[in-house]
Figure (cartoon, helix red, strand yellow):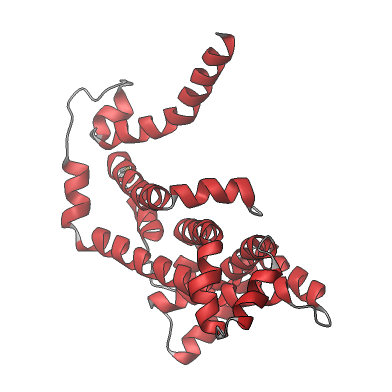
Length: 262
């Protein structure tokens, strides 16, 4: 009984900020700043209407989703062959190269912001979704390689050799046999790439004219103060993509946490 109560209290503690965010999104600024109510006294959809009718807001969501999806596809596409190489082959400096990849994930984004800004301005990629998507690869590719290498190392090498004996070409073997065996790893890597790219702010602001949704949310501060209701509604909507991704890859994530290197 005690364990159940502790578990319930823990879940309530975790969900309370999310509930309060949803609660505030249906309130006016006056109600938010003058009263403290568990449920909205005068519920309103004005905050959500502003987001769905204002081109700046829904354009920010579309722009952010574009570069996040691009980054996830690029990161997984690059990480798959790299992780296979680290898993199946030994070459001079392989461990040092693998560690160097991880150090990129450890470095703060501010270290790379100015070089990326200079580079993308010079080649005409500034203020495009490709600029942010490619910049996020410096963090997400090492993460995806690290996760996928752990899954691939768990697949016996005999499977590769048997496929070659049976006459499979490498692309056919990799797509038809190997990928289904590490589907959980791909799902876990894609999930983390998506989430890290979705919540990142510095690159999204530095490499664009504040087009991402995270940058637009900072504009709710004005001379009149913070528009708490609008900011809360935007916060609720930013949770939706993450929830959908978790829903679609939930089985892969569960297996990944149980079997993979996460």
